[in-house]
Amino acid sequence: MHVARLSLTDYRNYERAELELGPGATVLVGRNGQGKTNLVEAIGYLATLGSHRVSGDQALIRAGADAAIVRALLSHGDRELLVELQLNRQGANRAQLNRSPVKTRELPRYAHSVLFAPEDLAIVRGEPSVRRRLLDELLVQRTPRLAGVMADYERVLKQRNSLLKSARARGIAADKLTTLDIWDERLVTIGSELIDQRLALVAELREPLAAAYRSIVDADHAPGMTPLLSIDGADPDADAEASAAITETASSTRERFAEAVQSLRSKELERGVTLVGPHRDDVVLLLNGLPAKGYASHGESWSFALALRLASAELLRRDSMTGDPVLVLDDVFAELDRLRRERLASAIVGFEQVLVTAAVLEDVPAPLTARIVHIEAGRIVDGDEVLSPSTSGTAHTDSEISDV
Image (cartoon, rainbow, N blue to C red; front, top):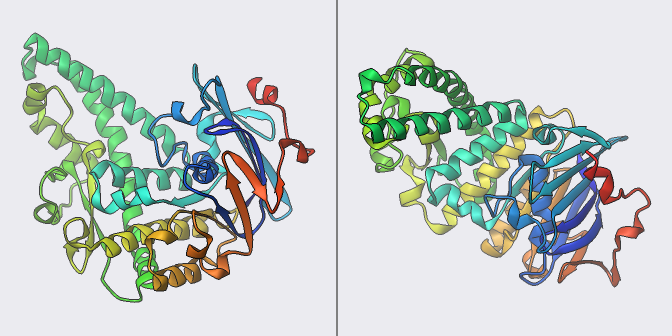
């Protein structure tokens, strides 16, 4: 699969923009702050329903506009699919597929992409929430129905936390709070499925992770991943090295989760918050048997984060009926030395579509510079020509998606 055309309306610093794309590599070049990343961010949003730079949608809507619209014409062989998304300041977002209304959570079923950006260094060095998000975004792209499971879990978690806070404020004892049992059951049922899905994904990632790391570094540093589960007593806030070993048990995830919820009820009432569940889990990333977060160098951390993204792309490529995901490298090559730039270029050249952003074209290896697009102050410049939205006869009007 590749993006044949990308159209933006009132998205970030673009009032209107349209970019024709094709298979192979395209480099988006421009000084910092011109809007290169905004283009690839929009493609990533269609695949993950989120931005890699901000947690909410409001920053994606151009100042003074009520909504932003992202349209992408996806091509796979002789088939084309028009995906449209409207991000609203007020009210729910809206989506269309070939101009027919759909739920926004359906979009990752059709738009597959993997984006690597400087922010991804936090995958190795950042908080557990960053690693949870990495896994969850990949899960949703592979199995879109899990977006609903995750949304259900967040709702149950919010309701349960609200009940715990209310009980703490009113001084209700743990054995008197019978209404909590209902939320406990829902938390365990939904949360167990999410935990099992993450565990299976971690197991699947190990082999392509090792292969991707070797392709970038040309060394065997034994990259690995070890889950830290709160239902087994692991504390993501504790020292990663001390928590890395998880006790093996024959009990099912559901049974261990239920036991953990019961054993922690008094402590949860004291603190007014849910202390166990997939929202408290982590994954320890290992190099040569040591936690990368504490021991990896800057270069090793970069290579590990990049290898995780390439491993994710490999899984999507293996599973998808629509071919390769779109591979996006946002300002990555500036952070790599010459040898790793060349090795990375060799590792990704086989993907159907690769989009690269760079402030300096010289940072990008020659094999990836077949097509170059210049970005200037929210304008897309192809050679000496500024592409206008009117250049495409199949572009749709804003009102068409507003009528969803």
